Length: 335
Length: 147
Image 1 (cartoon, each protein chain N blue to C red):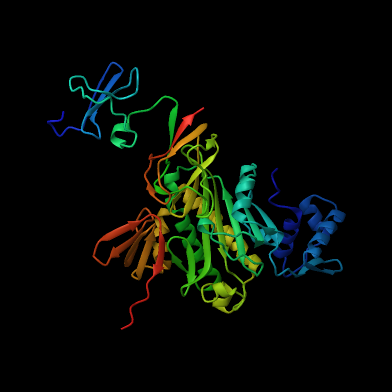
Image 2 (image 1 turned 180 degrees about the vertical axis):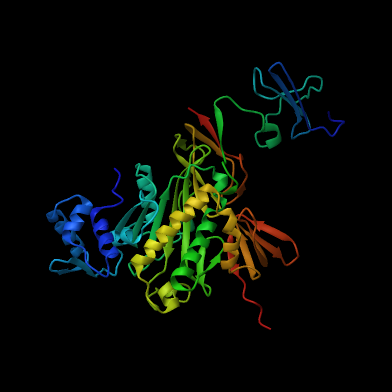
């Protein structure tokens, strides 16, 4: 089954948004969609149930007077104009994990690219099944599904590239950018604002499908964290002291992720990746420790190499590269 | 061969490939691409001991493919994980039946968690890599008895 990327509700909202200052008549909407005015009225009724308010005026049609503040799939798609007309979006009230749901739908044959967004995850997770706090609190839990058909070796930089793009998007949208902590965390002042988890399934020598998952703390209020996360987690709104328009932000995020994905697949990301990463890398020149298995290496972070490995100059002056591992920032010794 | 530093020597002629390499025990092993693929001791230096078939020694086993046995190899450089989380059961261990699309492990490269499928049908004989260890491209991960 292929869900329609441009359902009637989305088209109606697009028309109303395009004519935001003025009005759009029911006749014009009916003509646009090729359906009757009764059908338009029914679609608008569905939108009213979701929290939209339409202000009618005699002979002028309708005006969009209010929009839901919570996540709304039709509104996100209406805000999201431009490329990837084949992209579909599904918004769920609750799911175990958006990554797992995306993987299940890929396995069932759903056409990619698509995204799954959940208001709440019951088993939101990061690496190794570690829990990701996923309450319905104005934050974003989204997974993008792709079928890249690339060789696995080509995927080395994927998560890093996506992270750098998310930083730039946030910088453009909020006038402040989180930092990147290699390889998959987004931080404000050492507190976690987001995390990424990319999971892929392989055929013999190709990636069959890939899910890019993102947990991003957008609008959760300060002080709204459970005790174990207090002081460790932060939301964009908390940092900028201003709630974000979640639907507009999500639309921008989808646009950015799809564009970044295209640039990754065609290889053109290489031209800008290093600059982008270095701009947001928070570990560079800091004292760090890297844990891999039982081994712990302390030193100074030098950045990443051209394979995306984390490079550290050890206290003994050696240069070491890490493909995987946990990085912790060392506090400078008090003198 | 033993007097020289030579560790490997190969001759190819009219489709017949002969490869001699020094085994893990210092004895040369000969493999040929015709007939039996099992390594046998080189003529003329016949050791008292039977032919060393040492699956634990990668140098000796590299060319030895036993009948009905295949290996699941790593398609990438990364870190090998036998289970989805430290608390969960390994995807595959000795005795696990696998089909082509069975997930046998996860290899992490740059925080992409890649589910690796068996690509073959059979029973896992042995897991060849420890959990959390780095793996190279083409490295053998599991030995599988086909069937």
